[in-house]
Image 1 (cartoon, rainbow, N blue to C red):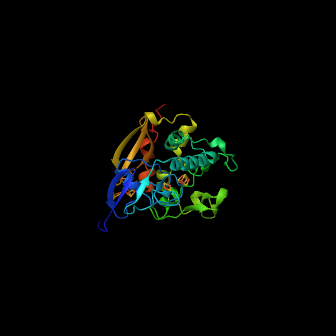
Image 2 (cartoon, rainbow, N blue to C red):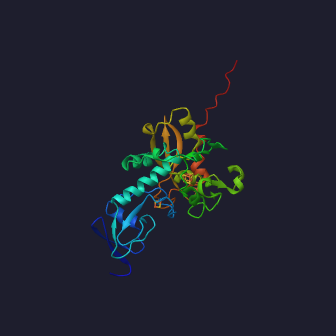
Image 3 (tube, rainbow, N blue to C red):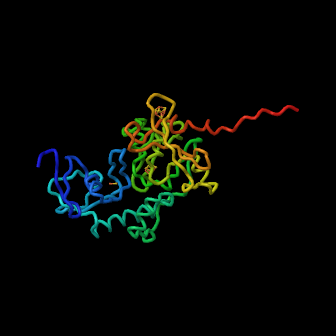
Length: 285
Ligand code: SF4
Ligand code: SF4
Ligand code: FES
């Protein structure tokens, strides 16, 4: 085997991949699904949630598939009882301290792994109190699972603003601006890339929040239309999410070669003029 490639076996299926390929990527190439939470295709693995763990023969502990590079000759199992038990416990602990109701992916995993969070007492569930500091997006940290995705998207994976980070540790750990200042007073440039990667809807568009408050958020009735942002020559691809012929949010495909899912404030939020109320001059008396 050349140094450029490694061969391994995953769930008894042999596979050869390029050196540096993660176990997650190798499994995906075989069509084997591994659940993830803090991993995203457009971010550096933060390696903090441990939902993606798998069993590697000879290893003392389970290994995180999202960040562990494949080793030549490795034998990996993604479907053992030990793996399932570990994932179930991660899901139960997350569900016992967070509101995961707006994360369909996590709800599916909770059902699939039979996670029962009622087994745990709940010493630290924060009160729902969304931070609403502007007209663009809200932050509801009772839904935050501390996956670091927003921190990475704000930092060196995309925006390089470094407006937010994880403050404190343990049950006090939370996403915070510098010195906990309100977002408009922080280094935030309102690109909204943090919303684009948040897996639990802790960060969400104000438009979505308002529609949910009015019990009128209807994803099943929404359409997504791709177009090109016209504000500058970069030409980012936009996905316009519309409901009742009104734009309700704007995203970009994570696998797009130009944006990698990230936008700037103009592409992400500069569309409300399209829906401005029509001015009607007062009629002559
Ligand atoms: S706000 Fe969202 S993206 Fe940021 S750490 Fe919490 S769950 Fe992750
Ligand atoms: S989203 Fe921002 S960077 Fe991208 S084309 Fe629009 S204005 Fe330019
Ligand atoms: S997805 Fe691998 S540690 Fe979070």
